[in-house]
Image (cartoon, rainbow, N blue to C red; front, side, top):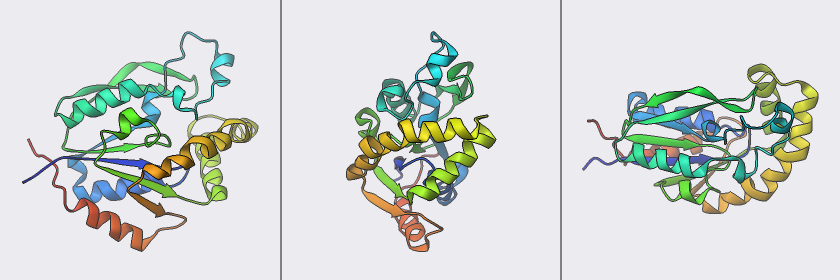
Length: 208
């Protein structure tokens, strides 16, 4: 009998979550998969000045609207469409527009803290933690934040030292204890790929 699946993907910044998520989506059929990213659910800070917004610790669980994220994951799991927030990482606020997302059967819930947020974690069928060396993760984050989020070198390094690394050690890394699988992912890991593929083959996404 066909059934839905909610797959949680966690791990430190730059660990390779997007690569693994894309691999799982291809295995299940990309038309059958909805991506739910933690990055969409940072709290709206529009009531604060830009300088105050920049000082917020976005790597702490309190920065995420876990209630809204869990509610929308649950809605998609139950077959209901949601209006997903769109976050502006340059302004540190939610954009006025939302993204209409229709349920497709399989959900991939991705983000550094998704295993730490119990409201979200409790909705997952399979929980995966991706483990990658710190130096590789930092280089990937540095490149992403400069190229995609309009940050400069000093701000990326400062944020990494002041919040990203401490929060990784306090929350993200410790959330691996909730994982069903821990994937080492320095480079493409054939054994890990095969394991994930075998895992998701037992689930057939709903087709309405």
